Length: 260
Image (tube, rainbow, N blue to C red):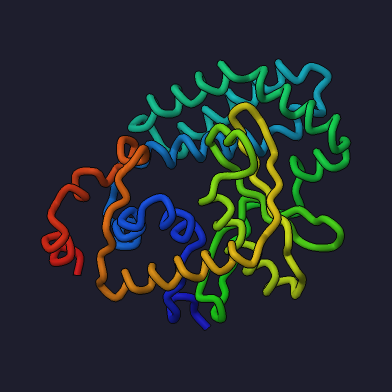
């Protein structure tokens, strides 16, 4: 059965819904926006995948600098000169907080042990894409690690961590991943984690029933959007970095007619 026979709601759309429903409206209509935030996120994701080698090095600070260079070079190969400024800026940002990243990794090793840390840095799988006809949800899990025989989804985040716990949108996204993994492995997936790469920090989060309920609520609202219903915008701190700000300023009635 071809996946395009069923309209799936991406886990990323579910988490974006709780930042701004209209952002999801634009994304699902393939309204192209500047991918500056996505390029930065991919840079830090590439850096994350090199951190295992950094921690195995006798000189992690130097190894991290090399990893930043590799992530920058690879990102330039992927995105080209159009995004060179963003990539160079991301590399500079990573170098400014390099000691925070190394310190965070060392602290995690001290608190939970080398085996647990290496399990995160060298996960069972990376970039695993899952589909569920039952849930009508799809998603690409950054990392999957095993804990107590159960799969644990891990999000690689380019954001600084909150003071405590994980961001609400990350929690809901983990819940969507947990439902997908639970179906795939026929196992109870009750734990997730977010790897906040800047200032490296791993935050674990229990997957609660309420989180799953919110994920399914957002899925239903996104499906309503696919049927033509345009949501209200959630004005706030995200607007300044949103590539859809110009389109979002158009009157709702006109937007709906444009994207039918």
